[in-house]
Length: 49
Image 1 (cartoon, rainbow, N blue to C red):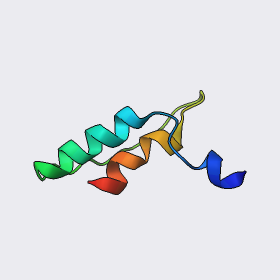
Image 2: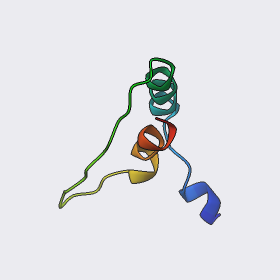
Image 3: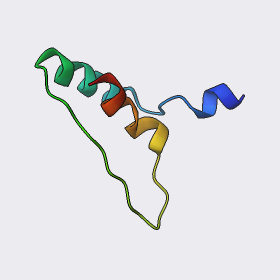
Image 4: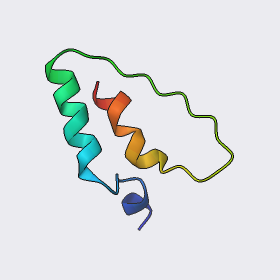
């Protein structure tokens, strides 16, 4: 169950990250917020690039 919580909810961000990597684009993400953010979904971008 905990493993499912760490997986991205949306596959669109994974596909976008793969496309960034194909063009050798690196993405860094800095998150500062006081509201909810789905970090598991967003983290796939810097992890892949």
